[in-house]
Image 1 (cartoon, helix red, strand yellow):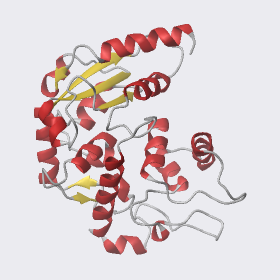
Image 2 (image 1 turned 30 degrees about the vertical axis):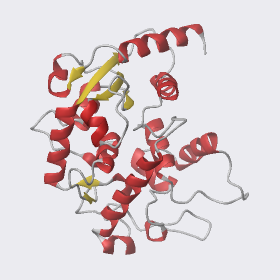
Image 3 (image 1 turned 45 degrees about the vertical axis):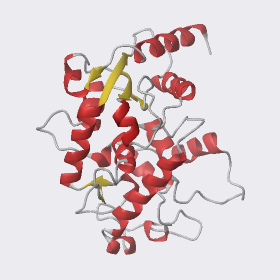
Image 4 (image 1 turned 90 degrees about the horizontal axis):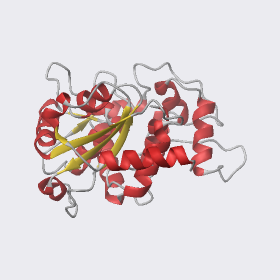
Length: 280
């Protein structure tokens, strides 16, 4: 790591481990600029999540490339009551939901019930989303590090280094010790969302054109095993990226497939999370 990178990493570590604010007071302190954020929980939050309490360690570290208020406070924490809560658009809300499923009696549904699909991006019923938001507002707090104008490299570089060092239990991508139970819990929510619309498995999502497939192409959602996410093509379309770019990112992270000429199929939760974090 270059000296400038080490300096910014040290600054970020110090800031994100320092002052933090309760969720409902954070808007007074968090500006609408790019940066990193760390989510902390009180002792009860750690216990509710089934974790040994470490209230001075972050539960999750993330980044916003353009606006911490919009990404962190509005999307993850739903602090603006005028805006609809969208667990299906928030990786960290889905992780909290998966671990709090029984305690808060949460039910997973498709992100868009009118166009069911991509069940790994599950949402929650309205009352469940309300209970999850209330729990997050009561139990969690946040710290932020604003991107300095002198930062020559990407926020992702700093974020990845922090995750690798702190190993927050709710981070999956870049975490050398991801929480195995989290992946299992998210897969269970994915299956529940899929089961709520069983007819969706026999047809493509309504916002998709029927796929023109061949034996060598990625499987359609109908061929996907329960608990798995979208294929690289589906995920690339959603993220407005080239499928070639997404496949290359997968190769860079996980290596080449064992069989020459083989194609990536439905992605695991870890692979999907990695691609979303890389290109969000």
